[in-house]
Structure formats: C-alpha cells, structure tokens
Image (cartoon, rainbow, N blue to C red; front, top):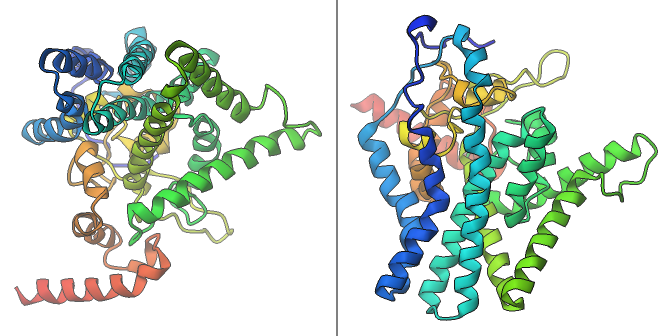
Length: 395
C-alpha cells in the first residue's frame, strides 16, 4: 500500500461532505433535454451545442473557481460508506437517463429539421452523454456483483464499445503504464497518434483475451457467453430497435455519436497515464501498480460529475474500491486541472505538450529515460528539457 494518504477527521465525526452533491452527475444526461427545450423555444441549431459548451466550457470554469478537495474518508468509515446503497443507485440511475437522452436525440435527427451546424451539435451532444456513460460503465464493470457487470455493458452499448468491459479489466489494469498497453499514452505522443493505436489495439486485445479464455478450456469462442460478442450484440440490438422506431436514416447518427463517445473515453485514457512508466524488477516482471503510475486530480466539481474517476491513482492501486471511498495520495502525480479542461488541452498537441511534458520529466527527477516515451519524440524531448533546464538555471 502506498504511503502519503492525507489525514482526515476521526471516523465518529466524519460525514461525507459530498453526499448531497453526487446526484449532480445525473445532470449530464439531462443536458440534451435542456438543448431540446432551448431549440424548440428559439428554433436555433446552436441550442444543440449547449451540452458540449457546458461540459467543456462552464464546468472547467466552475472547477477552477471551487478548486481542490484532498480530504479522504477515514478507513474505519469505509466499510459502511462502501455498503451504502445510495451511492450505487446513483450509478444505476444514469442508465435510464442516458437512454432517454439517446431516444430524444434520435427523434430530433429523424425529424430532419436541423441545419448541418445543428446536426453536428446534436451528434456531439449524444456523444458527450454516451461517452461520459462509459465512466459509469467503468465504475460498474469493476464490481463483483453480476448485476453491476451486466449494467456496465448496457451503458457501453450506445457507443459500440462493449469490448472495453473485457480489455479494461483484464488488459489495461494488468499492463497499465507499460509500452505493451494500448491505453497508456507515451510521453511525446500526441492524442491524434494515440487515438488509432488505442482504438485498434484495445479491440484486438479484448478479442485475444476473451477468445483465449475459451481456447484454454478447449472451447469455441463463438458463443453467447463470449463477453465481447454479447456486448456487441447489445449494440446491434439497440441500433436495430432505434432504426425500426425512427427509420434507417438514424443509423448514420448512431454511428457518428458512437465515434464521438468512445473518442471522449480515449481522450480520458490519454491523459490518465501520459508518460508514466512501471519498470521491470530483477525477476523480469513489471513492478506492482501503485499511485505513482496514474495522474490524479482533486478538482471537486469534475470529481462529482465523474463519480470520482479523477482519483485514478487509488483506483488503479485498488480497483475494487467504490468511487465514494477513493483516496488522494501525496505520492500521486497531479494534473494541473480537472478532466474537462485536460480533455480540451489534449486535442491541441502544442498546448498539451506545454502543460504536461515538463511535469512528466519532473516526476522522474529529470531522467527522461525513466518515462514511458514515444520513441520518435525522444530527441526532441531531450533538447526541450535541456533548454528548459538552462533557462531555469539562468533565472
């Protein structure tokens, strides 16, 4: 267990200060209804850009104003906190709200009254809701309860990313912060280079992991018990049902919003382990995952909206721990802002490099070779670090 957990008040006096605010996470799938009401009231296609504007514009501003909270629940309070069904039901409730928003967006698309600008906003609106739903799927998919694991695949169906359920748990968590992990971004690798590597690599990994599970038992992987196939079947059934309800013309919309949704997930994957590396021990195995191998953020607002995904260091060190019990560690590398801000920065490589490259290098005390480096970027990184060090020395 990593050291450096920040102390909190005694258990007998501790109350979850965020308890009244966790339901705010359900506002995200409610945003398309705000867009719809505004669109109907103004007849302006710009209304469908409200959801991405709120998520990637307003929330980062509020996040900055409210700041961080690094407090942790006392360990003696964790069993009761983890068993409290209130927190579990909030993740369950995201799913009907997510599906209601998707149906609404399909109905608007099928109506055909949007300009190209409005249609693009509608695609992004649905993509944001279903992309953030992958975070809910992530929380549910890590649990032992069969119902939660099944609901995880239900949340993944609108983005067609059901294989994430397999790859994330059995692939990413094993190989995180190593060159073998397609979901761990390398220092000097832009998001646009990372995207095809992780999308294709994660799909291949999920298929190999799941088919290997059957072949090791001498069974065919072509069965409904195959977690990848039955997750994809959920997507096919969902898209078919929506095409029957709203016409086949809705299928391009469903495909576009799915790409937007899983691209949002991959942008989050990109920032969560950027440049961080686990090294091989004398026995030839990678060192155990600990809080040093994931970027962390204690920004209050985005932690509430994302079921505390930003306390990613504790999640990887203790993947079965429920979101309300995740802790902040002093040993974790810290992002300069919350995920909503960092996702936008990741889309602009020069801005991202300016914000993050020096933080990775400083995390390794100036030794670039200790980071998980994108090989073609190594000469550039060495020269930039040399110039930065010389500039700081001259001050």
